[in-house]
Length: 322
Image 1 (spheres, rainbow, N blue to C red):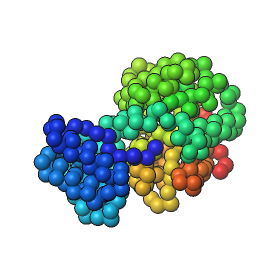
Image 2: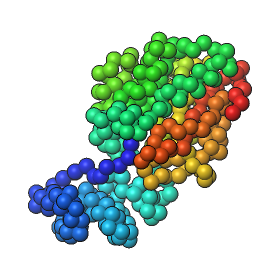
Image 3: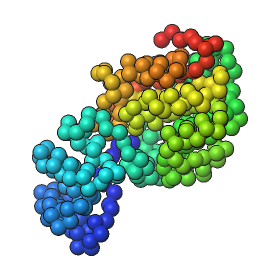
Image 4: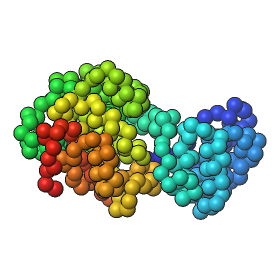
C-alpha cells in the first residue's frame, strides 16, 4: 500500500488542533497556499505538533517548494521519534536523508490499520495483485523438481494481512499460522476462518519466539511483505532456522535495475536481483526458483517484481533452471 497522508495525532492544545483542521479543510477545497499559511501559524504556536509539520511538508511538496518541504519533514521527524507519520521516508524520497531508512513499527502498523477495511478490494481489483497465485505456481514448480508432495503439515504466512495468501494455500496445509503487525488486518483474517493460529506482532520477535520453542514449518510464505523491509538478511536468517528439514520458503519482492536496496516513490522498498541472491545465500538458504513477474500494477503500469523459492536442505541443494 502507499501513503495517504498523516493520521491526526493531537498537539495537546485545542486551539492548535482547530487550526490544523481548518487547514485540512482549506486543502480539501484546493486552497493549498492558504492551508500552508495556517499550518505555519499552527507549528509556530505548537512546535512539537508532528502531524501539522507533516501536513505542511506535504503541501509545500505539492506546491513545488522542495526546500520548504524538506525543512518541514525534518521538523516532523524531530517531533516524531517513532516516525509514526513516515517523515524519514519522505526525506529519503526527496533525497534529503538516508537513502533507504528502515520503516518503524508504528508507521507500518498505522498504515495497515488504516487500510484494513478496503485492503482486499484495493489490491485484487484496483492493483490487480496476484502475489499469492504467483507464489503457489513457484512452489508447485520447486516441489515438482524436488519430487516432493504438494502438501504441508505446518505452514507459516508472514505478514498475513487479511489472509489473501492464506486462502490460496489453506487447502495444502494441515495447519496454517499467520502473523501480522496490524491488529485490524488480523481481525479481517480471523473473520475468514482459514487460519488455525493468528498472532499480532513483529515478524522478528515472532520468529525469535518460534526459534526458542523449536517450532518447525514445512512452508513459509511472505507475499508482498518484504517490500516494507529494507534489510532482508535478519528475517531470512530467522526463517532458515524455523524451516523443517525439507521445508521451503517462498516470497515476493519488488525489484529495480540498480544495486542493493532502493526506496521507491511509492514508499516501498525494491531489492535488486543480486542483493536478493546474496541475502539468500548469506542466510544459509539454497535458491530454487527466482523468476521475474509483475506482482501488481501501479497507476495502470506493471510493477517489476521477483518471486523466490528457497530451502535449507543439503540433500536438495539444486537450483532450478530459470
